[in-house]
Image 1: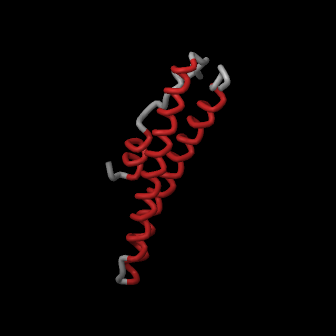
Image 2: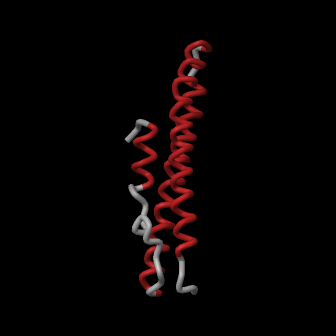
Amino acid sequence: MTKDLRKEQLTLLRFEKQIAGLAATLAAGVAVAKTADGKLHATEAQTALADVQTALINLAEVTGKAHDALNVKVIEAGAKVYEASGGVPKGDPPKVVASILGIG
């Protein structure tokens, strides 16, 4: 194992930021889904959107776990960490995503 895992940590931090951005885009789609369902007297768009929200929160949870596992490996190896942000996400990824989606 390399003694410098900063690159991997930085990649995870960037990915977590992208997930948050995707959540913001998805949140904007809520109004569109409600409007579409209202015009069609249906609930398919909202149901599909809820499925996507669930999948995105799952992705955030898995990403958070990957970050935690990487941090454990860093500590075990006594490796250098990404210090610009402390090497950890600024917030719990699933909570951030749920907050952005307005469901948490």
